[in-house]
Length: 102
Image 1 (cartoon, rainbow, N blue to C red):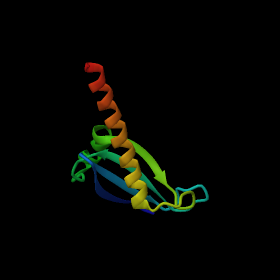
Image 2 (cartoon, rainbow, N blue to C red):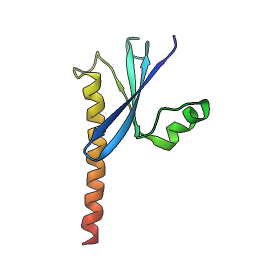
Image 3 (cartoon, one colour):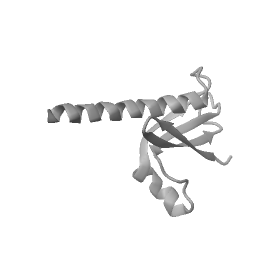
């Protein structure tokens, strides 16, 4: 079976993320369908093979899997929570930089 790929854009406060969703029909623990969730810096979806090859190391932030058998949250809520976690991490790094300057 061919993997299906979809791109979604989420905005959390000032940060904008592109989330690459890849449907894996037999990727789960008991060969159930799962979705691979890749949170990336904002970018347009790739238009050719070279852009698809280079997008991982240019834009990738985090990579996880959403398994409907293991979680009660929807796919959209799961993506938002992953983006929120990255925004919180960035805010903490910024706060640390600001407090170091004082």
